[in-house]
Length: 487
View 1 (cartoon, helix red, strand yellow):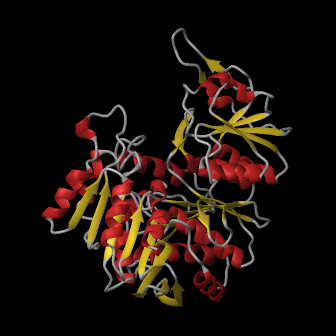
View 2 (cartoon, helix red, strand yellow; view 1 turned 45 degrees about the horizontal axis):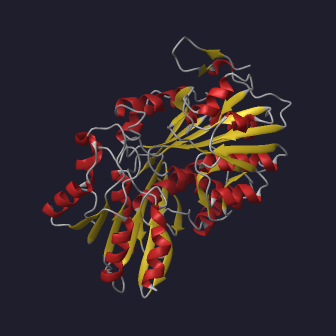
View 3 (spheres, one colour; view 1 turned 180 degrees about the horizontal axis):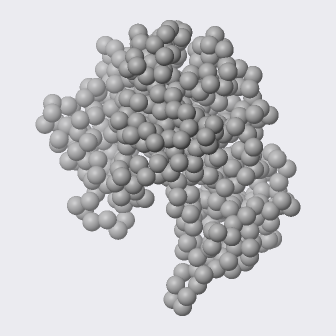
């Protein structure tokens, strides 16, 4: 049973060393159930025959509708009352803190509990061949591509991914095949387990797309991020495989000491897998692949940009190791329809194209804008940026952002909500970014709210404009509202 270590005047702390997932579970309760991953886990548990309940502070569509449609009762707000009737097991999301009233009640209840990654690994990855997609950038797209292509190849994989996969209209699937694809997040697991999530996923094959500093709320610097990936490499089985982007020197450094097979990929001809003859257009991107210096195949994809070619190359390398025929790989890559919120065209009104993208890290912003500028060559590209993550609202990337918007003809930046408990000199400033962009000759404006951005776009957008909205959040439903205004 979970136990409590408590001293006078201290917060009760759950003992993670005593976590377990009992075999005779019927009723599972999820704390923080409205998160993307936790909601998907709730759906998987419900589909597997469990009685599932949940609680969350913010219960609203679309996740509330999804859970209701699944027949999952959700309590709005946290508290001891949510543990009645007593569940057989509680899954604790990483949004939950040690001071959460429901967590404190759980600590004294002797109800078994696990973290989200533990539950996923125990109940759904299990003995499957675990295919983990990790890295600072491209995880969702790459994992979605891998799952979709394996499905098209007849392998029927299970998967859990951080974005909605167009082919399935879902971000999860239990699957009947021998593989399980999971997006391997380096973010921490739970308040009682500060290690990265991906350490729980029992990896057999790992893709590492890139390693940069991010998640400033839990990592002090790049060295700390590298340490988490070193731990991932260290737990790889001897018969496992790491598919590593050697274009990234940090990735190369991390996998250099791997005790399993490493397959390199990137743009250099001496890598195991390399890209040549890349041609990027609005409707199609084509490239050729070489394996060990020899021609492997010509590939076509709807996803623009070098970064997406590299993501595709990583998946091709994994599919090849799993024994999938090159012709099948090429056909399934061409059929892939993309991922929600990754360079997703939300609509076209009066010749104006509105695109939604998840980009928020400086590198992701630069790559996204570069890809769209190439795909929509000759058209005016307007970038609308909302700094919303914990890292992007800090000053740490203030100077980095100045050099990543060059592909855009105009940049509109929303002043972010202030991070609590941080002094002014540690906060990101949209106003300062705009001043710095202007000093580089980039047309830029800052806005205090979404309504003002919409008003400006409604007045200034013209035919053939491409407007890309970049945020890791809903951005006040700006995409739908903008399309309505333009109509």
